[in-house]
Length: 206
Image 1 (cartoon, rainbow, N blue to C red):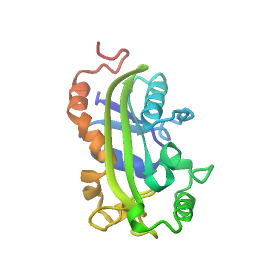
Image 2: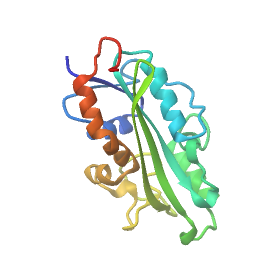
Image 3: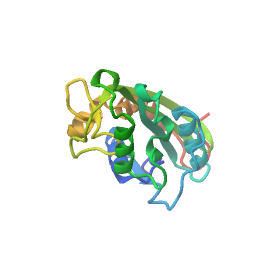
Image 4: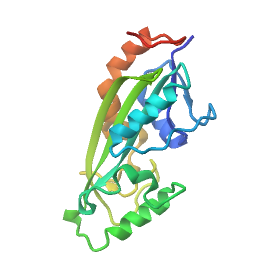
């Protein structure tokens, strides 16, 4: 049996991005594939939400569960949208509405004060127990209008130090510098070792 991983997302764009960050040869499923729903994200930090998703979902499957929570913190907005990034403009989550609201709330804020960062916290769990964790961040600014057609979420507004938005990067380039890529790289070696030793018929390794 190939190693099994459940990605705690139903977002196809995110799932594709995550799959490219994982070791080759693993069998990957998403929440949509298994008709599962993640728990309500009630944490006050990205780490709390990642733990909540990883632990809760790992109690419903023998697979390793990889869950992350990520979002955008804007200094001029006192850290908003933060953990509410995906639902900044309300339910249901909608990237275009979120981006429009962000631009509205930054009206009149000059370029030098539009500093921001993407943050990501990722957890790997099995049978209700967190086995690995990683953190990553990527610094930039918020632009004045969307640019680029790649990525998802706030990528079209997030301007990198070289002047391009995250949405203007090739996927391979984004997977070198993004907050999510950095977080996953921090646990990559440990994840490979875990996949080589973990049992998929019950308990995690002691």
